[in-house]
Image 1 (cartoon, each protein chain N blue to C red):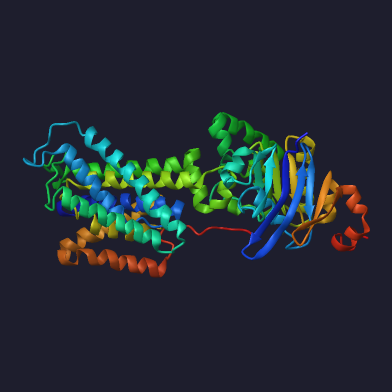
Image 2 (image 1 turned 135 degrees about the vertical axis):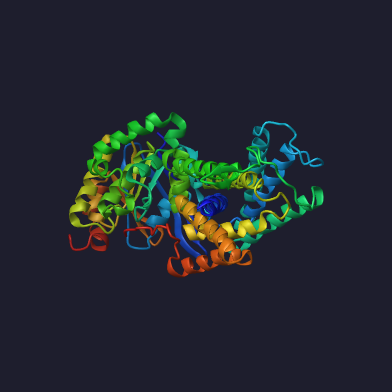
Length: 298
Length: 243
């Protein structure tokens, strides 16, 4: 039982990070129809920026600042990077009318970010001491890290807040309108360029926060976002590329698959189950579990 | 008096193909002007050019004397042009109410959500069926209801000029009558000038103040609705058996 609870919590918390990144993929996909492959490295930037503002690199001890400072720092850096990617990677490749141009351009920005961090910051891995403590708390006899609980709570909050924003505010609804029909939305006076730019900023901020959240349970390094970014892309497809709550389910499925495989089969096969699951989903439900079929009348 | 909408010698190309040749037309305040002509005559192209979905190769378009032809579609909308596109184009995954709110996007930014709610109330008074279905996905509405929604959504913008592209396309005769009744109501309200593109030329001329006949991308004739209805050439070419 204790074992099970422990696996459950760590699987779900891992899954929520995938879900957050998947949401970040979804927002920009829905407005611009391009996949932002820099997302994984935006998560890394969140981890690195948060670490630099919170922990003394030499001693590995906290600088004694409030956690608000790294949090705000991550939001600021995230929004700058999001705007940058849209302006200098996505928009120019859109003008070139190349089908894969923007995907490659975002991939390139991601690689540049990773190399910049490796050259200017460090190539090592660093331990990010959790702001909520690093000693496990006992739940049903299981040892659960407070950071894992924080991840789950914060991620649910972010996804719910985002879905509420999209369905209850004028700006949020216009994201959906642009996503469904860009030309018609512009006839209502909605500026597609503004909405796309906004979605890139929002998406990069979410990816950065995901990096800040995951850093204490992994390690901070220039490569921390690479694999996570690919897996989260899988989750965004599992959940349905335009479904907000679908990504939570997809993320949790992948997170649980991983921890249970690692525990009961072998940690070497950890990554396999998730991708097997992804292939099954693509075969059986190409729109994702929650991808909705659009009803149209002529 | 400057017309609300004025096109001066507008030419539009699709690649090498000329779609509009030096089209000039005017819509005055409170007027209902219709644009009739056969398939491929350039009616939809004219509306798309006004709302800047297409850009003219040459010529100028003015709204109350201010140029529109150099703007982007969202800026044209911001100037007061509401375009109900061909095929209705409601946001099918948004609710009826959210579709109306999207129509009120500019109003919300300029005057706040209260103005949008007030405008929405007016829309529901004119189209009670939309009120009954406001929580439904717009994609689940019937064709006639979607057309009402598309018109109501455009009216949320409090436009200076309303462009209606084939509002009766694909509808049953009963719904077609309804749509013409609503257009009449909008015309009588005199809050906006209307430029109507319609396949059902006979019906369109019947309710129009003036009309232009478009043929192969150029204006062929113009006159009041009544004049054109009585014109034997027009009768033969566009009004079918009603001679």
